[in-house]
Length: 213
Image 1 (spheres, helix red, strand yellow):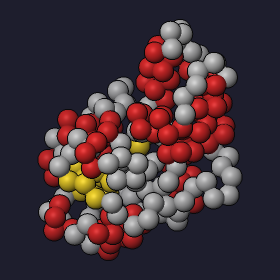
Image 2 (cartoon, one colour; image 1 turned 90 degrees about the vertical axis):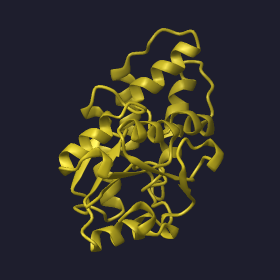
Image 3 (tube, one colour; image 1 turned 135 degrees about the vertical axis):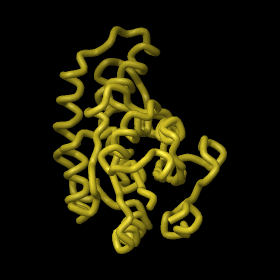
Image 4 (cartoon, one colour; image 1 turned 45 degrees about the vertical axis):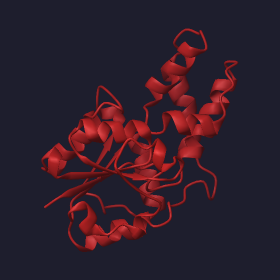
């Protein structure tokens, strides 16, 4: 029996641009101009610490006080406006299909656990997944494989039996580094930009046989 591990932002929920808009506003306060679309393209799935550290380094600035930045970011993220948390088309249907077939499922996300729970509650997916993993629980975020390996461990599944659904380059690299099959969901990248052989625009159109389920 295979298991399926989902990234969240950009795969389950259309929240990449909520992340990036908040991050862009925070960076602007430090005199760093980085548009939300560029943040998504470069850093989708990357932990806050790694993303902000890299951006500040590129700008020739010292590493910021991450506790202060994280506090500001998550205060805003955990108080979304109506319509800011919506499902990616096709994903909820795919998840419910897997649930009907008793396929073990996990969420492995760079978001905080509080935000993961908020998103799943908003989309009425609470208690659908067998385990939830936040990058806050591992030493190295994506593109390191840690978050996916922890998800597999909690599922009681061998990495080679897991299928990862990802929308970000860092996550696709992480999934393959974990020894897992990876499906690239095209929500902001082109197929040519995805470092994985299997890409799809909508999970509704993914036959389960194609990933061995």
